[in-house]
Length: 438
Ligand code: UDX
Image 1: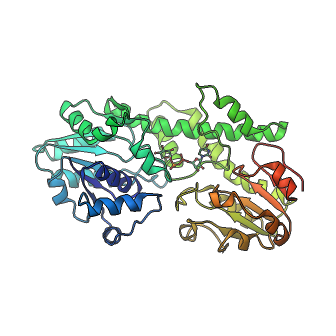
Image 2 (image 1 turned 60 degrees about the vertical axis):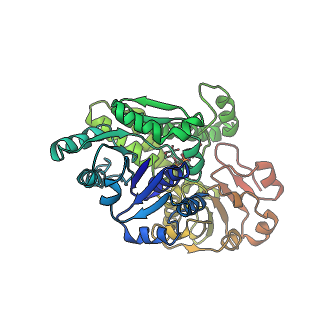
Image 3 (image 1 turned 90 degrees about the vertical axis):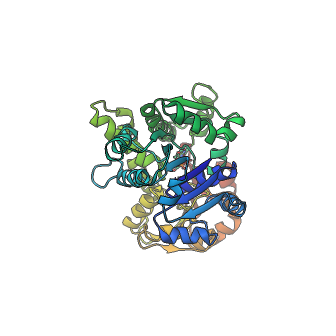
């Protein structure tokens, strides 16, 4: 198959590289000359474990290339994926589809012969219909079918999520398009990944409903965590106990500082707006969004309480800035709000993250960027773990105890055992379980 990926951002690059790895001929297109030049130099603009090796291998094999020009690759393609951004529109929270429609028009102008155009970007229900209307009315002589094929990959685990998905959702009722999509994913369903065919609108909604459900599940356990703290129960054990029920499942039940990232905050908001527009409000999701927003600030207050009610003039060490580990992505990261709350409280905030500090510079206020956990913790009156990077799991607590001014750990990801923290002489403030006094 000759495949073109429009948009070489996160989803486009990972999907393009993996499809090439399955033996397809893939060209990734982007409007940013800077990005395409970097990719052609062999630089990968995002941090995703394993992605650089797959890109290098498939470029060498001649199956993957990059292009600033859209017209020629599209003219030769069997399938064109739209993987451009759909950010929240400023002001009203709806998904901004201007990039999607602009790409659709450019694609239609360039298409020759029968071509399948696939929306890979997360797009609100009805977007496929609108693209089809544009094609029908503005490009009546072109033979194009529009398919929805949402992407469910997680940052940091994107390659394995793409190659070993729980399912591949394909929204189309057109036989020719379905045949082509079967061919695109043949290597995967040989791997026994189920292809799930449904109507295009249903497919578009599946993506939003999946993300909203997961965001709700996280928010549920976060609220249970708060209750655990009040009544003296342990949220990790509650999560395990309910997760053993197969109807609930044990995934996405880690209590923490609230969800962030490029998908959950944006997609929950967009779904809420769509539902309101259709006069069918999703109150559970509206509440999820509100609880998650409040939670981030509440985490700042939790740190202040752990420091005896004030952080004014105190050095606070923040470990982990990205919205989760194994990514350099800072979008909607809880750290942004938590750091702001600490700065508002008058703290001297020192931060460290293995991959996120470059992106963080434009998002955080006046903080000090350290070189490692020990540098930021020296002289600090609390360590706050915001992101559970592996390298924070086995810190040298004896050393930290001697170098910190006050041995306090606010463990917003529950990565340390309370008994161990007590042994090292730390006051430990986990999420959803009893705190341990030093
Ligand atoms: C998510 C979806 O998982 C993926 O299917 C979709 O395609 C894009 O959005 P991603 O944003 O990369 O992926 O990260 P994910 O691992 O889902 O985590 C999202 C946020 O939820 C992070 O801030 C994470 O820390 C938080 N989270 C996740 C929890 O707080 N607890 C959990 O149990 C799981």
